[in-house]
Image 1 (cartoon, rainbow, N blue to C red):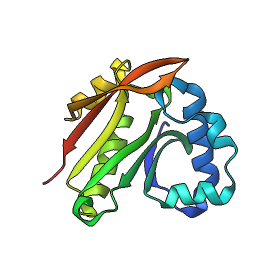
Image 2: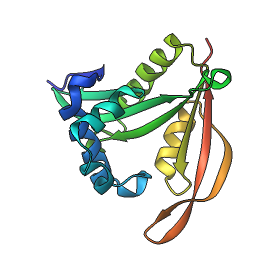
Image 3: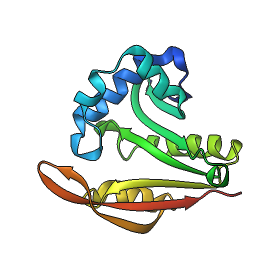
Length: 167
């Protein structure tokens, strides 16, 4: 029936988190600063800590995890109104289905409930599809980090994008 749901993961969801995060890192290795190898060696406690360090949302299709999006809030009191969107991934067969937008909307709803006013993210300057998605979701480019990541032995710029979410 293709029923989609989105859920905030808790510390008991290590296996779900591991499954979708490793899928993302293996399917799109050039889209992330981390590699699957970096994450495969983590203990269950380290996975649990990464779930609880921020907010991790997972999209499910018929009970199967198919997308992920995380939120890491700034800790300093004068910056706590800001958070970084991390680990963004949607299974390729579901891109363009609206599910990534639903996932982002759920993350924004949560961020607002926590008093967050601004979302920030970093995206490869070479990832036109991701940049297009974020632009359609009202993120704006505010900066560029030359050589922000080394991919396949070559420096690739990162773009910094921001979205204000004050209601």
